[in-house]
Image (tube, rainbow, N blue to C red; front, side, top):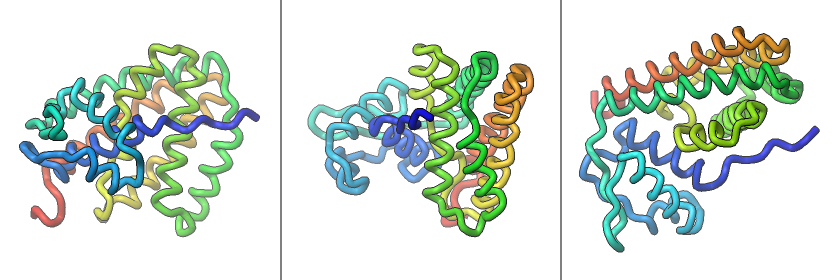
Length: 219
């Protein structure tokens, strides 16, 4: 079996920063330092600079000449608009993956172990598997432009670390992922599209709920 490709560092860093902005860890007007973030994430400045450029293109930050970036004012409509685009494109990618065919066995095995032994699953395990699964579906869709757009829209997991519902979200996502892969395995295009649509829609509402209620420290 061909090894799954990891998402590029710039995509993963963009997703980390996007999620931090969505969830208010970085607020409107906050200054982001390229050097500080690179040190915090343990990476070089280059992928962070690339992530800053992508975030600026999406309208989340404003770049400042030699002074990092400033976080823009991001509201619920901005997040919903972005997540609705991801919902449309990921739904289509799932349908194409089912139509073209995809080797799902390793992913189903990993998800099944996660579902059977959640106590042995750490946060990083879930993050890695979540990335592997979505990237494999984008690849199986076999549309370079679609994959590029989905890379740009990627925001990682859709729950804030430390919230009580984090484990429940991971549990529900694991079951949704299994349902999705089973549909793809059966070449059930309609079933795969429906499963992905339901999964992303729930994730979108989860993000919006957290952004509207704030973090535990804010309440």
